[in-house]
Image (spheres, helix red, strand yellow):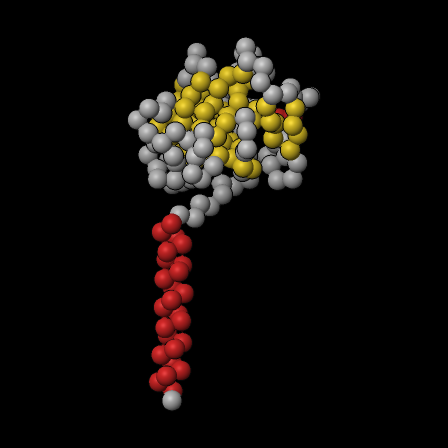
Length: 166
């Protein structure tokens, strides 16, 4: 399996994990794929080879994991070129494995905005139905603090104008 990682500033790197059946993705030292970002948990998600192909699952991350910009709630089947959103990073599976030995039911993302199909095995060519919209924006704590501070400044300015006009 090969992965392409794209960062928030457009930086890219490819990872060749041929022969590996599982990759843990996160910012911690124990992660197989390390992403040095505060929007990525120490152990954020896992991509593994299971029956029918590759599967991603969130490992209790703070900000969650998305496939094709839809938050996932359980193991989710991946196809070639599906996008995994981890913090502000996009991870694409470049060559999804075809077979494996695990038989857990998995969720399959079909349409990136409206429709999800739950199945233990994909039916037909679902990859043709997926699309890849632009990466979601990530609101960090510093963004929210900045917005709150601007609101307080605006309120203080209004109070100052009212008091100075009297």
